[in-house]
Length: 104
Image (cartoon, rainbow, N blue to C red; front, side, top):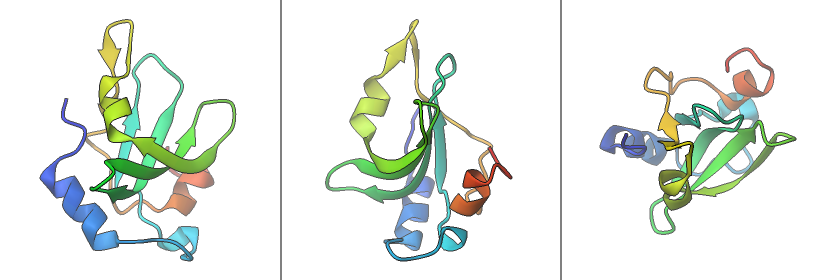
């Protein structure tokens, strides 16, 4: 599965830098997960030059905001399965909705 499409990249471009914005204004453009793992990455920004997402990560012991490499996500396999993109994800979902559990 292709994790990053042209349409998703355009969504990140439209959103731009979210630093200083409240969580209610930060759109989670894409959601990535591993089908047999506990981690979920809610991507808010994407840096094309570094091929990195700024994302809210859950399921790894504690939830946190941080950077995750597209290359690492693409190359992660467990039991022969790779990271997937939630193809039904609504890119109008805010970070606040994810953090409060309104949307998962």
